[in-house]
Amino acid sequence: MYAIFKALGKQFRAEKGKVVRLPLMEAEPGSKVTFDEVLLSSDGTTVKAGTPLVKGAKVTAEVVGDGKEKKIYVFKFKRRKGYRRKTGHRQKFTEVLITDVKVG
Image (cartoon, rainbow, N blue to C red; front, top):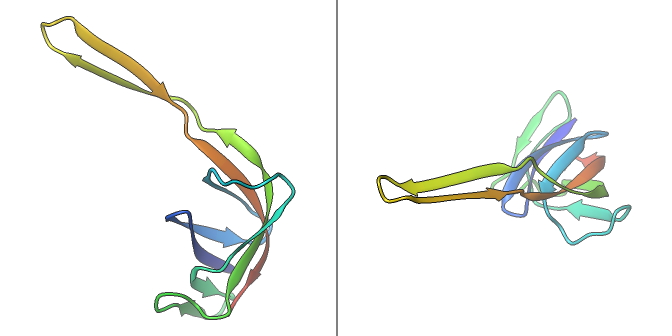
């Protein structure tokens, strides 16, 4: 049983017992969150696709914690001018444990 849900402008696949990495959310570790925007759900035999959402379907999860991705480096320069800039970025994320997938 799985579902495709939309959260924070992106789409994620949810299966019970799996950990999903979402963009940073304002939620305390250990708190429960519910995602009602389910775009597609499957119970193993049938697949329900929403138009645009599946009615009655929802995904329940528990916040595990926050973290940062690996650093990516951005290097820009202008040739023959001595202009060079190197910057880095680490995207923040929230990990949630999927506790229940309700198929509509």
